[in-house]
Image (cartoon, rainbow, N blue to C red; front, side, top):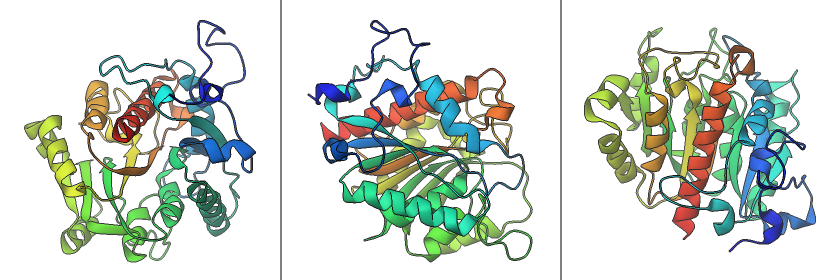
Length: 319
């Protein structure tokens, strides 16, 4: 049983539309708070989208995700897992980026996450664009490379953009491989689809031993079979989970910057996370929710529902 201090505010005590929103109505503990020492899982906002190459807006993602997360209740409706009773969870606030400087922002993000890791806290991140994953991995995988299970419609393995721009939301995992943060043979990318500039990213994946599951294969095999392979590739070693909301078909998640048709539905979006049983998750992120394109708020609610599924898997793994 977790410390009562870390229990979320119940909708039976305060209506979910009332109060100051925090992630899942958990206590807010800013950086440096003495109670960081008691936190098991910290939910962190990274309001930054300077790596975006198409439609901007994910910098506003954490704020909308926080608001939508007030709809999350304490118990999983299928498994019965109650993550807030199994672990001390808290909203650790946002990393303050420098919107005018990519390198400075990445240094700020890495420094924040190094403090999180040093405190023994497992980070669950609300982005932000997908470049955010790189500075997070620089903290999470500082001592040794990790595996990765990656849900996305894009590989994010490109070398550069516009003949030399090395840091965009299309390059984070290429840099992470080059920097020794990821073990390529323990990386699987699921849901890849859409038109292409060329095959450079897939050629890199093949050369490095990264497993790509195109959307056609995902639909043909089904989520359960694909996730069985993902668990086998990840093994028992430390594994990072990265989930781009554009993995989901834009019918169900229109609020994102680079949508691709033909993706999974919203149930399958949850189902794949439920297939992570036994994976040694050391950090996770949900990125690319873009409120300017999410008129109904449905994309954000799906996003926080996915984050709750992640919390439940982390809790089950600790049980």
